[in-house]
Image 1 (cartoon, rainbow, N blue to C red):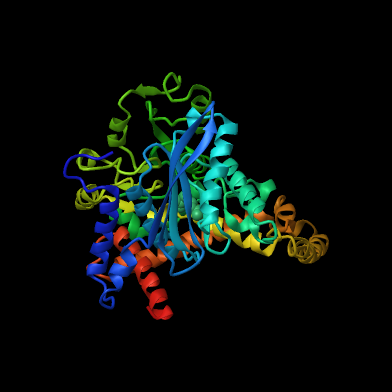
Image 2: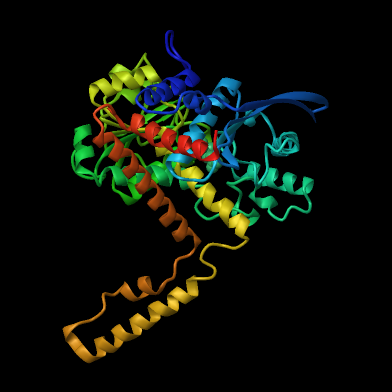
Length: 476
Ligand code: GLU
């Protein structure tokens, strides 16, 4: 999606990068080395389907190998092209640096509309694509570790992992060749929800800083905040579900490909999601006003706007009319560079994509570590933790008996305190910590330098600084 005079997605990423390096003091030439994409592999392969050979075009781009393996999703969409894949790979480099996952940046894509194919056909296509990439080390536990992205999920990752394992029968770490796998195939608890969960943790952290809340003109907490979500896919759905279910925010608008739903009293996220699964879109859903031109709903009054679908949806053609004082970019690149300027001038606070949607790759990192260590998180500690807690509870119970009516344990304390952390709890704790620390790194730069006007610029500065340090340490 672009309008005349609008930079492309890739140009937008480069523009934002350039603005950041302009105020950095990098050794000559290093900025160019960091900005360019190291390599992009294009593959055209044939698969025999429905009685004839069909040719597919796929890409895997490696943006930066300052750390290996390189990491990033593989998307299945008709619009996939080299420029898009390269821009997304660059964002992966910066994202991984910002949230301190020890990876370089990569991204892949296949030009395909997955809805046009049966499951067994998609499996054939995915296995063949995997074969082409694995042959060139573009899927490998130590070199390049894909993950889900738009149009792919656990199912595709399981096929990829299995295909890789078949091609590398003696590779003990074969499962670590992709992340986002189902739990029974080497995945990790909490990966599916991770990006949406990361959005929630990012917003919670934002609302812990009164100075930052004031910059947006908002007040208070997430409680009661009116949120419009664009795209109720995996990321948008989980973010919306957690924010209204656990933080008491109100989802007043949901924008989908076939229109939008609006209800100032709040939409039932679960019911809308089910409606979309059953009917293919939002049209016809009862408990809301249906707006055919969904893009208009992005412009409605709300407290927080969450674009969680495609890139470029907020651009020169609509930025001036966007009313949300706070936007969190759950998608990659939903705001073009031109729109970014307009929104910043209006005083809108934007929590940038490279930070906001980093929950996915963060939990991917945990999954990769789990695969390499061949043990579930919490397996060694859980019961030991419980028995130590039991000691405390035994003592408290003794005190309880001794003090009689003067003191007693709060009803749920015992069961809650006794329970040792399982994998899901540990994953959430690691994700929460990651999102908090990365936000604090950004805001420190944002508030301590006069030449850093917003969080996006701060995010680029932190990320590029870390990548630069890594290149310098390697002697390039
Ligand atoms: N595709 C996701 C992203 O854009 C996840 C990448 C990963 O887990 O490697 O961040």
